[in-house]
Image (cartoon, rainbow, N blue to C red; front, side, top):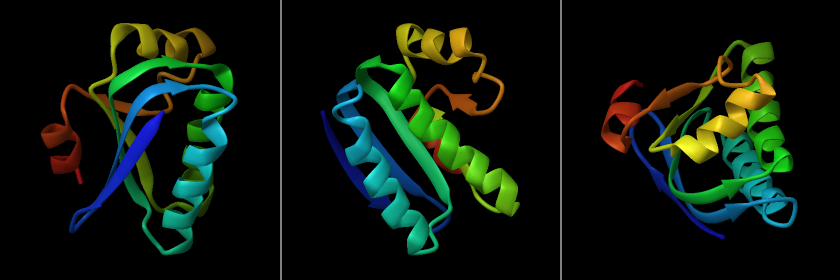
Amino acid sequence: MEFSITEYKHCDLMEISGRIDSYTAPQINQALQALITDEHTNLVINMEDVTYISSSGILVFVKIQSRFQRQNRGKLVFSGTSELVYSGFELAGFDKLFEFYNDVVSAVGGF
């Protein structure tokens, strides 16, 4: 798994490739927590190149989104999510917690 972060005026974009599982999820969580600590609270996660996401990976994003909702500021959205990866969110019942966009341009433009 690899990821990169790009800062935009109204949000930050994290592009992830590979598998998000119990081994790689803590790395993503650490990077997202660092962004939040630095007051970056509008996040786009590009999942276009993600081939698999485990429940521990989904949980990282759920916890971040829940934190944003409790604090009533910030939002985490996804772009380019494949049907396979989306089905993981759907099966767990978390598909209603997030916004899913077809591409990065639409997701970034949503902020």
